[in-house]
Each structure stands twice: as structure tokens, then as C-alpha cells.
Length: 155
Image 1: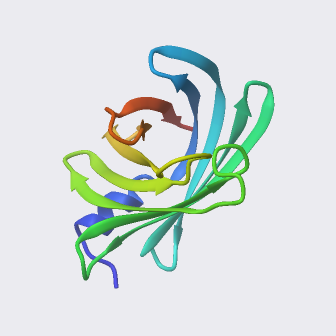
Image 2: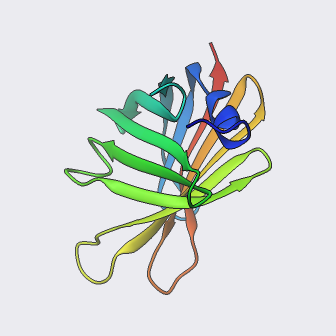
């Protein structure tokens, strides 16, 4: 069932978006900057959002999908993410809290060797026609570092 607060906030993100995605593989060293298109659709009567995006990363075609929701039982935002370059054949599930202009979720992914790394994704909508999505890598026993930043304008 929809809730006026969280689900209304989520559904404000629905629409067609164009922008730029920046990617860092190492802290402070920009690896790529390229155009990105995103489409966010209300799903199941606005209970969830389906976010689909496409662009390039270092010349390779990139596409991904997120299913986004707010679980009214727990009060937490939940995101499931897949894409063809960052996630390989894995799916990441992240949960987190709301914020004034959006929400932040935390998940993890397996490293090639050693313990899993954390991944924090922050969705901010500072204005109706602006959407910013930032993702941070969190190495074990280290500080998080900005990994991806997409700045969108509504079409």
C-alpha cells in the first residue's frame, strides 16, 4: 500500500532524465565522464520505482536497472541493482534511511580476494527537475570514496 510521505517522495523522481556520469576507480582520479540517459517509472501503482539507465563507461556500452522502494514495515528504503559492467552477473540489495531531499542505502559486493566491500548509494532531488545519484565504494577497514556520480536534468 502506498504511503503519502515516502512513496510520494519516490514518485517525484519518475520521468525521463539526461545527464552526465563520472566514474572513479581510485579516490581522486577521474576515470570517465560520459552522457547518461535514465528513465524512472512508477511500478505496481507507485509502490516501487523501476529505474533504467544507459550510457557508456570508457567506451563500452553500459546499462543497468534498479528496483527502488520503501518498506513500510521497516521504514527503510530498499534498492536492488543490476548492470552489465559494475555488477557482472551479481545483484546487489541495499537498505537505508530517508534524508531531507532523498535517501541513502548501503549494500555490499564480493571482492576478488578478501572480505566484501561496502557500497553506499545516495539519491538526492534538490529541485523537481534535478536528480543526483552518488555511489561510494567502502573498502574493508578504510574510508569510503566517491565511485560514481550522475547528475541528471529532467527532459
